[in-house]
Image 1 (cartoon, rainbow, N blue to C red):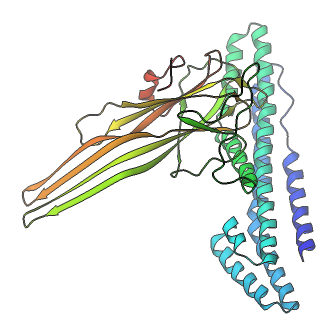
Image 2 (image 1 turned 45 degrees about the vertical axis):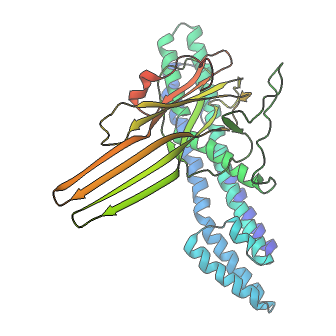
Image 3 (image 1 turned 90 degrees about the vertical axis):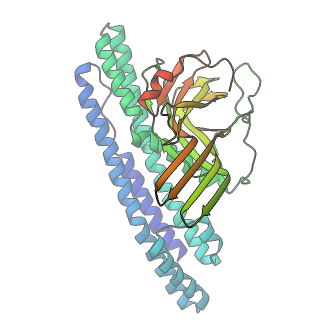
Length: 409
């Protein structure tokens, strides 16, 4: 049973990889007149990869259910009643949930657990290959654009060179590209997660050229490279828009995530015949996570500094509307490459107080304190040149840094 299932699934994966490897963009353009055709060729190649890979991913649940049915029949022929019951129960569970988790595998009998692990591994291979192929296509496309930009610059065609650079920047910020890089790191970290203890200390970063090793743990941040960070308090992505201040040609690609956690929450409520009132006070911790890599996989920044300017706004109804600085977070790391680097900063706190009063004559409320408003994220290279800067709101662009802060805050 296992060998048959494995051979069928391996054949399906081989077909997937063949389909994913087939499309490729056209030869790099030699002149600005070929720019649109080059972009269209790249977009067709990406679309072909996504179509082939997602078709295989969509068939994965059906393949797993067929394998479960085959396992059930084998157990029946072997007179294994417990095996039949377990396989039938798993068919019902999977039909409803459409996923396999490590917790599900841990509670399954040996034969079923082996089948689950095999199919979960196959799905991860499909997802990983899709992400990797998208990243490879983009890297080749980016190399072609960079070569054209340099040629046009040497020829004195500056306006055309700027058009090429703009197209390269748009491709680097494409959610399909940035998402593939983020997801690939997550899939690979998941595959390695079983080998490391959950609370393993962040490893030391690579030694910078000519310097001492830089620790991954600093006073106010932790760096994760090559392994998954802790889950944290339900992170959500906060979209960043480039400010236009970054001038380095070897730019970085950055995503910003925010987690929110309430501490010391206190509630009180009072009521009389004629009125009622309620108050809620809490200390909110905002967790800032930056996910960064070089836009071009071949580039690297030595001793870069990542800065997050975090801003809060007054609670609605408090009488103020201007954003206030919540804090500036700074992390100097050893190196930033085409591999994903995740930086978790120490949380910043904001206090909140809400009071509401209601009576027969009307109601009133009073709020004080702050809540998260937005952020500016900047990446500087070791010489203080800007490789990336993005703001979550246009109103924050005027507050964005133009140089590395003198000291972390």
